[in-house]
Structure formats: structure tokens, C-alpha cells
Figure 1 (cartoon, rainbow, N blue to C red):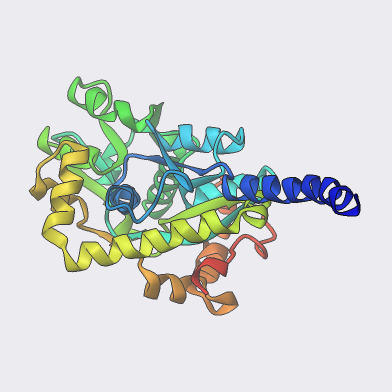
Figure 2 (tube, helix red, strand yellow):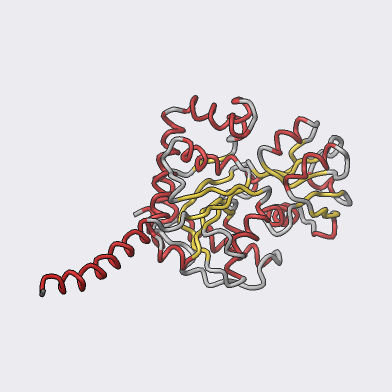
Length: 318
């Protein structure tokens, strides 16, 4: 009788424990938002090579960076691939997006391309320039103007998602575009000329992975899984470059030569670079963050300086 009673008491408790364990193991995958950009391709390569499984991480590609930011703000995403200036803009709006990985550093990959007959940036005075508002484009155009002793009133800004830049440029609706690969190659193919690039603002254009603070605290395993997959993918691109290029070309529907060209001026960040940039207060990204914040305030892209402590989280590189 006592044995039967003990079993009646024990079985419900065991059931609760088992159900609890199952719910932990089957946590929803971390949704990671990206837009089309060569620097984010190692994520898709990692997925294709099964370094990253869809039960832990699900990649969601959007037409533009503005769409990614909007989805992250609305918490339709737990994580997002963004530029560092976009991460700062989120913090200005009290959205706690923690920078956990550096994905790439732009060293000429972000550009302003102008149509034939426009020889330099100053020739854009009075011209129509396509800019993706609320994203990296606003930062790049503000820095280009400042370095050329010009202001926003000197050009006619046409707010346009990057997915529409090529068509607008080809049809003559704009005279220039603040853009990046793979659109850059298309505009150059239409006879365009680079009149400004991120080479002129070294270290300022950095792509990072951000995660909602609450989600990261509750679901560290998903984030660790993604970081591990990213580093394996970067390594694969080094050791098996030809195959990696073929796979990326197939996904992007461009030629392998175009893939190789798209990485010109772009440094992908592996484990070594992430250690240098994120490791505590010694990390290079802290200095970049301060410089970037000051520049954005000076150009009216931030209302005021931000408290920068707590934006960078280096747990995934340790």
C-alpha cells in the first residue's frame, strides 16, 4: 500500500521534471535578421555547411537594413546584423541591443557612386542622391559632406531603399547613390564612378551582430551556437575558398568573380579580430564606439552623447 502511494506521489513529480527539461531543450530558435551584404554571407554559408542548425538559429533576410532595424525594434527578431552606428541609434531609443560579435570592417566596400560626368564628390552639389534613410546611408553621406566642407542642403536627398538603387540609377532618376555590394558593381557596370568610399573614414563602418539583452540573458546557448558557427565559416572561407566562393555565388545568383570582387575593401572578422576588438575595455571597438558616437552627435544623427558602457558584451569570444 505504501509503495503504491509513493508511486502516486512520485510519478507526477517526475512528469513535471521531464516536461520542464523538454521545454528547455526545445526553446524557440533565435531569429537573426540580415539584409543582402557580402559581410553577412558567412552566416548563410554556415547554415549550408550545417555548422548552424535551424532548431537553434533561423536566418531571416530582408530587402534592406531599414527593414531589419524595424523588425528588431518590433521584436520580430531576437538578433540582427547591423552597422555599429545603427546599434547606437537603437540605444538612443532605449532598445538594449548588445553588440556580441564583429562581423566585418568596411575598408572601401561602402561607397557613393555617381553617374558619368560627375568627377568628384563636390560635383554632387545640387544633384539628386539616393540615400537609404535611417540606416548606414545617412551616416556615410553625412561624413562625406563634412569631409568636403558641404552640408545636407547642398544636395537633394532622395530617400530610397538600397533594393531600388540600381533601377533608379539606370533610369536616371538619381545622379548618385550611397550604396554597397552587390549594388555597387551594378552601378559601376552602368558607367558609374566612385566619388567617396569608406576608405576615407577608416574604422568607422563596422558591421556587428546585436542581440536583445533580455533574450541573451535567458538564451545564451543559441548565441554561443551562432558564434561558433560564424568562426567555423570564416575558417572554411580561408581553407576552402574556391568551394566557399562557388556556394556564395550560387546563393547570390552572381558569378564567382563577382563574389571575389565584392570582398574587395571588406575585412571579415574571425576569432582573432573579435578578440582584438571586443576584449573588455582594452578592445579596439570601445574607442571606435566613442569616436562614432561623437561624430554622430556632431552630424545630428544622435541627439546627445550616450552612456556607452554595457553596449558591448564580450561573453561569446571568451
